[in-house]
Length: 140
Image (cartoon, rainbow, N blue to C red; front, top):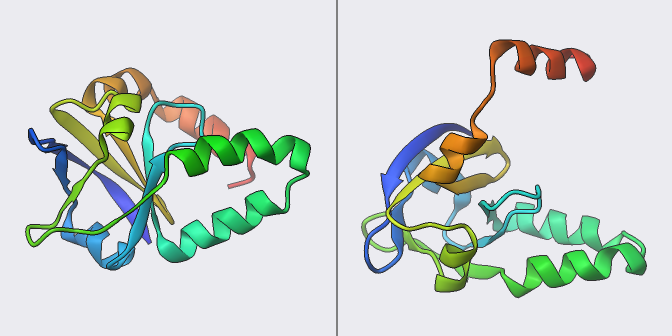
C-alpha cells in the first residue's frame, strides 16, 4: 500500500528521488504517465496496477475510451530506478506537469501522484471539514 507525502528536488537531468518505502511497492519496472484526474500531475503505477487500469479502459465503449486512450498511452513511459533510487521523468511529462525544481510525491494506495510543488500548494486546500464531508458522503 502506497501512502504518505514527500518533498524532493528535481535535478537538471530531470531525475527525482523516490523514497524507499515507495520503491519497494513499485518494483523494478513501472509506468509513469499523465494523471487522469483532470489535474496537471503525473501518476506512477506498479506494472500490475497499470495492467488493471488498461483493462478497465478497454471495457469502456469505444466512443468514450478513444480520447482517454490517446491521452494516457501517448504520455506513458516504462521506467526504472537508477542506483540512487531516482527516476528520470521524460521531458514531455515534466513539461505537462510543470515540474521544474521541486516535486511532491503522494502515495494514493495503489499508485503515486507526482506534483510540481507549486501546483501542489495550490491544490492542497483540504480542511478537516471538507475531508470529513467527503468521508460521510461515501459512508466512511
